[in-house]
Image (cartoon, rainbow, N blue to C red; front, side):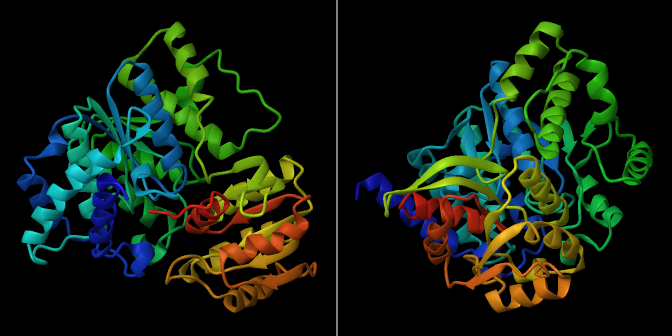
Length: 438
């Protein structure tokens, strides 16, 4: 093992001691930001070294962030992008000009941040996400980024990323997710996410559920926050926009339009530049999100899955979008590999899971790589109570994602859909590539 790889693995091992939510099942205390504020102060305030675009929402944050980052690069800016979670390698979360941060650069910043964090000896409180956010800020400062696109981790108001000034804020679609932390209704959740806004700083708002738009308008007006609703602003500014394909999923279109509106509010460009943006952002995709692949090789067996769809959908809106995409792409009948966190199995998922599972001919239920996982027995019980198994699909329990793929090899000529958790999708991709995740 080369010295850089050894140092990288050592840093990752130390980071894990902070216990991320996905590996520890311990929810982050989102009420405490004193730790990250002190950490950034002791680092010399790296978060003040660049201009920030801040993104909150339930679905579409990562794709919107990636699209905006791509467009800023096209504008000629040195651009950083911070997203979460990652599929295979933690460096996916920190991008420099559309490329994952190198191991050397990551280790340099992480080593410094961890040294300072250790010196606090637990006081003030620092979460895994606090530490990782500070590492990202330090990387962006060290590499002289001019603009940085920040995706919130959870919520907005008390998120680790919400300790900065910003040039513009973006709200993607708000839905019912993380309700045990953020609230039991759309408006309660929206109230947390709108906490990223600042007086006088514009907010771009993607299309929302019926009834939420007037609430958001009233809320931001009371805070003296300029608001641009994508459904109104996009048709005015992009008159010649034409998105044509056999089927483009609505969530992708919303992210596409939101990213373009954000750029136009910031830079107010002419028709020619807007067309350049339009063509560039059409090519942006995100692995593991409505990720349709053909002839997927599993090198371990030297066999191909003819069609595979990977999607980390785990909340109501995302699961409904996944079912619509499957129908429009004519992927029925298909084999469904499904794994979910136990805390996601609530009433909001009953209807979407009925819609998804009723289209599946075969159902392979697997745990996800997290202590939060629902057992296969728990999953089947929930699905049965929902009525998702009324069409009597062939059901198999397995003990791991790899075993799920082994079973699905028998049906590789028909589409295989992997869904329910972004961590499951990441693990499946690791297995197919015969590599270990970081």
